[in-house]
Length: 277
Image 1 (cartoon, rainbow, N blue to C red):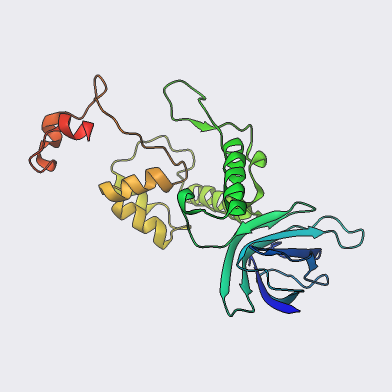
Image 2: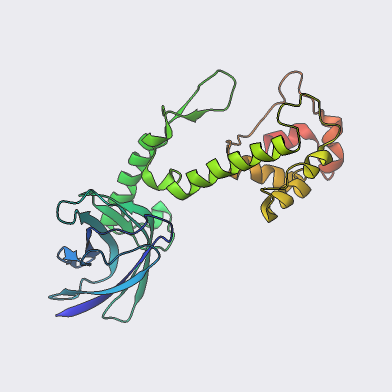
């Protein structure tokens, strides 16, 4: 018998742990392990790191993927697990990391490949290539775009956020944080007699003198740097409402920016040439 040491790390937010039974399968180039129960409920709580041994009759070769699933504990309600990471130490003294950051749900096998990033052309193992293609198809269905209004940026083809995969929805902690932030902001405006004000802001700097209750290092940084091109572009791609950037090969009619306006920034080139690059 050969033994694989498995370390499971759970999320540290409220309700990330589980009281249910969690199982693992190791997939290697030379075979796979049996479905192994890892925990005796309620061992996997929030923010814990637990070690287990998975024994196999012979070496599995190179471990390329793991599978996680779970079953309810007795007759209690379903209790999903948020798994952050699984580390596998092999008999060949190799340490492999399988980043999950996903919910393990009732009788749904979660397959996670080893963490090394790899392009499709470098996926030479058939099982990994098959997994990649299936994952891409699932993601196309989950994150399909639709045009809500002609001319506006596309949005997800979903009626509500509950249709999103569980790991990309806001957690209970975050939803409560949103609610608390909204309540304190409204209270702050009422205290300062601004809740029903219809007067326009004199200048943007005045806003900084009003909102104090929920000020953070991040909000201060955004206020100071939002005019910088690099940070403004970052916000477009990664902000609360991310947008897609596409190459523009000709300027739209009535576009406010002219070729003469950007000429000083083109380092000797001209705008029509840069649009075609």
